[in-house]
Image (cartoon, rainbow, N blue to C red; front, side, top):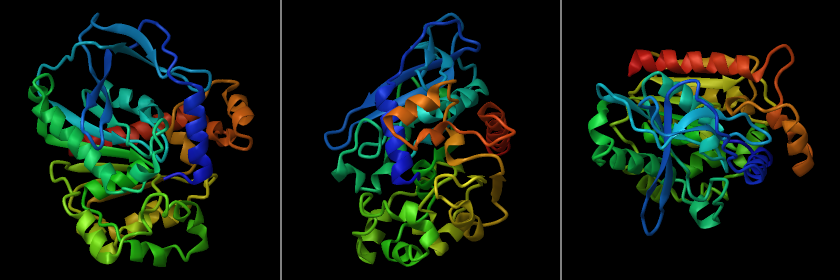
Length: 350
């Protein structure tokens, strides 16, 4: 979960650079489409990446804009599946959106997975409604609703292997998938943990996210039903507010978990107190904890173009760090390392 400054920057960038889809021949046959799940209280827009039938759909560079590189896909292509595919649900960070992990979703789809990423109302770039944002328990439910729809869908259900379902999240999305796996949120526990001054960035969001409002009784009620046993492996990418989960609930999680943490703390999200908190309380036999020495919190987002940082700085002075790489490496190189960790973990557990 990025802090408010980084989150506001992601929102400004995405608002400035709504997807500019440039037609080009795709490097691989990755399909993309969006669906709308209608609900009077919380409608969801869900983005899908999947193996595509060759020569179907419209060649598009998805998510390409003045700041970020896009990904070649076949928009509205037909699904290609000779056997049921494993399914990954994906959750974006605070005030982010599906574009943030577009590169990783396409990489995973290229390995033969169906990937589904809902935009979370209230905490997505184009929907920052405070009432929705304060309903922290809705985020994992968004992922479960996405699973419900896909598994019941005439178009997709028969192409999904229900025994192989995973979840991946970045920042607040990492927090979301841990909740989906059984992490139990406690406002009173978080309030105690937030006495640590180095957690000020994530803890600064607790009121906006409704994490300061629950009594212990309300919290227990809101945690009910969030654990989704259909999800059998999770991946957290540099999450924040990990300290909202009780140690007892983390110890009880029974699914394999990959924790990837940024070793460079340029967003005031100290990995030792965030991802490291999870690693200390999760079952070590089921947990793979990796600190990426040359990654920042923004490294998990897409690759910036030359000049992209200047565009961000013009709109949000001081926030051009969203495009920074650590000296001696590049975001493309770090993406290769992230993708290797993710795809190896999924191959082992799904």
